[in-house]
Length: 505
Image 1 (tube, rainbow, N blue to C red):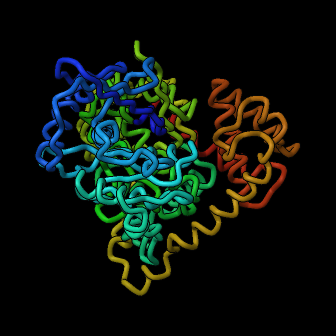
Image 2: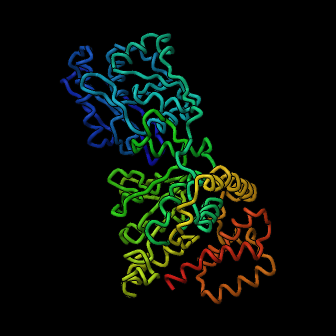
Image 3: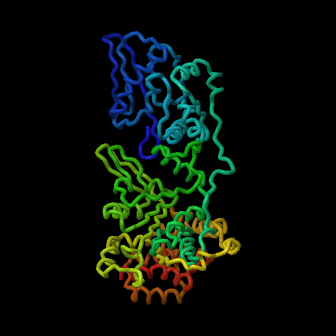
């Protein structure tokens, strides 16, 4: 079963004894788990197994954890057949079972297979039988054999012959050369050099950032290309992301592993629970689906206040914790949050030749973004309307634009510097620095110290904004290869906070 995004091995015990015919299940079960007795009973009958009427008791342990889902059906059916003597008990040693049964005896796919197979491997099982539709996903886990089966009858046949069982083992899934490729590229963005630089800085330190500009200035286009300049997912990151998508049933067809950085762009009408995660049985929200990638919030002020404010804790902690009476669930939310917005309801402020919004309407619109949330955005960048010359740029000139691979090379170099610097600190990026870390790692040059003091007073910074500037300056210094943050790097970081003053005061 699944708890959070991790699998948990549960034990299915069956007992068949004399007495009034009955089929009872115990072990703190949800409604869909309790319904397994009807699915299993009819599936056994329609698969040709004639069972004499006896008293059947099924216990799913541990009893103090609520069991959700339908993945227990196959294990229950196999346990009953063992108790009736139709399957030799020794043939199941070291093998885990998961899958939902149809009334005709077919094995139906379930969500979260990769997490459950990984949990079986960690628990010492050498094999696991899964539905055929989940075979590729299960086979992505190394170190354990995965046996796909189409029906309950096929499972019994496989268990009766060890050679036949081994012949059904699925091959370990290996990604092809075309996997992990993107169909967009940064070279497609013409003009907007300052915005592309800000995007590079954000990617280099995994900083949250916000773009403000009129409609059609390229905000969405830039955001959609951010994953292409992030380094490729490591094996561990790919497995973590895949687990999240697997339990949500969102793995692309024919692709059992997530090999590209996620990009999520929820509509602004999304609820707070859909954004952060939740439900009676908690499931990951959009911020967790964007883990290790980009969460893009277009039309930022149009999101409900509750939806925006629920992001504050995940942005700080890099995880979402959902508490219920039945327990607490944690989902990772280590992503880059990118927001895009117009400067006013019509989108053209402060160009009064186009903007017809009153000053009150502009201020009311901007106030939809709270100061605490704005402080959590490391970089704020103004995105002016595109110049005609950029739009009319000839194809040969567009080819001179830096592509994603070139920018990604610089970002990877900055990541390696951070990885080496923080190898003993339990963090990976400059955006994760705490106050104590910054005293040691965000050292300013003498001229930078003087500049920072002047900026703090003149811009009336909050303590959080001050620390954000230092984190961004540290990232810019890493892109330049500086150990001590220079005045130049600090000046660029300060420039990324000037937009707040322009619009929010």
